[in-house]
Amino acid sequence: MTETEIVEIFLAHQWWSITALVIGVIGVTLCWFGGLMAALTALGNRRWVWGIVTIFLGPITGIPYALKYQEAEYARSLMLRGVWVLLVGLVIAAVILMLGR
Image (cartoon, rainbow, N blue to C red; front, top):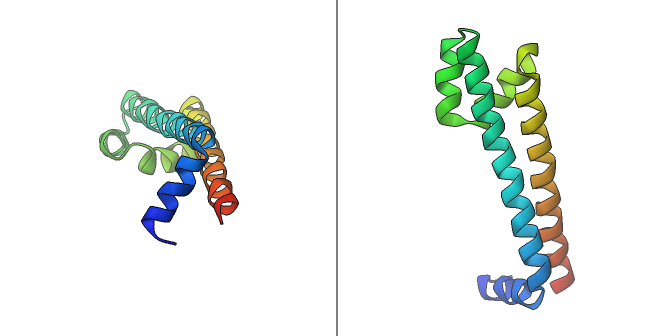
């Protein structure tokens, strides 16, 4: 499948494509906001390395930090919900591609 065919499929299903994009952006936003909350929680609890690294890498290091330390429960809930919402957006996009074949 070429790039032109993929674009044509998404243009043929514009409303579903827009829905998938918006849902995906919401998921990414929740993940990054959760990463910032994890960084603030780490810095507030004087876990300097976790906090500074998580400021720059967001949910990449925020998720392991939140899973390891109970104090980051709110950040963990935001990031895990963000991952689920992002997966829903990706599933919708995959279904659009399958319908286009």
